[in-house]
Image (cartoon, rainbow, N blue to C red; front, side, top):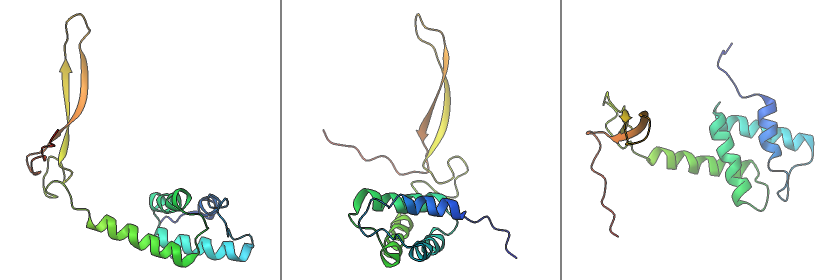
Length: 134
């Protein structure tokens, strides 16, 4: 028995329902169930991935994707994600590979009450920022 948290049928059906304005949306329950099964397999328990996948079709497609189109787009999304390299060193304890770390500073200005400001600072493990030419 697996205790891993899985995406609910309600969430999967809700995301599938976002495609209902596209031509070719599966009206038959059997076809919808095939799509739900496909979405469950492709999402791999990631709600964020599922939403991003469906959002791409809502924003870019004229016709409702079938299982093959969903699989192809999911593969493209995963490939693009895998090709992204961390900005910093993944072993860095300060930024944990993000290339930036959080800084908090007290700001005091004339005629204003002092306050704390939060921001990000580039970590020493990250390569220098490229200068943009104006």
